[in-house]
Figure 1 (cartoon, rainbow, N blue to C red):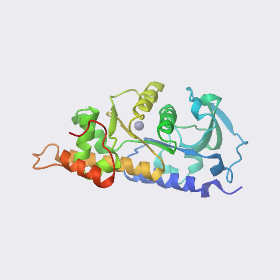
Figure 2 (figure 1 turned 60 degrees about the horizontal axis):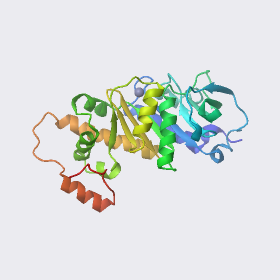
Figure 3 (figure 1 turned 45 degrees about the vertical axis):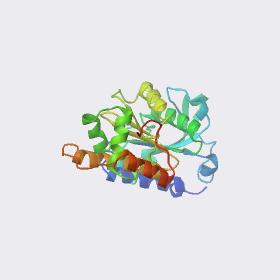
Figure 4 (figure 1 turned 90 degrees about the vertical axis):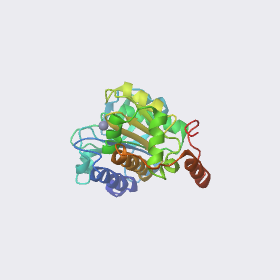
Length: 270
Ligand SMILES: [Zn+2]
């Protein structure tokens, strides 16, 4: 067996969560990331038959039965992942229709997966039904997106249009827009189900007064998606209280659609 800490998926995960912390998106134990792995990716590094322990998940996700995930741990600090990945990360395989997770590696201090595991797994199930190449669900607390949920209307069309107007590349990066959930209690199956429902139509779901969920085909892509929305929100928070002299108009957004071959969410542009 090769050393699992040298596996490309492990190296990339450690780099991404370290970078998320460096961006200030994951204070204390904030944030969580899950990466879907193929059995063929892990076989060189881990024995799929060697289960360390089995942990109930408290939900059902039949479409994910037998699937492997590299996931961050509950109560763990992203800033520590690079120094003790085997404590702060784990590789699990869902079993029993998603009702339990078998630990194959990690959480070496007896810990377990993120408390937001329901939202992650339900979101994976939905995104895979929309895009079979989806691999990542990422949650964090970026300052400006969070700030925007205090001062901006939470209407999804209005919120999306504002972000598109704040930076030219936004409509190219997330033409489907962002979906928004009102404040809800986190860590529950209810917010998991609500997030997954929102993931049917967008890869970005804002949790008002809390943070954001992103989904994508890879760690870099998902990070970049959140990074772009957060950048736009930062511009908004800089200018929202100032008189605007000009903005990105719907005509300009239509030009971007044509130039980059993307289609804005139906009904979001006039
Ligand atoms: Zn959070």
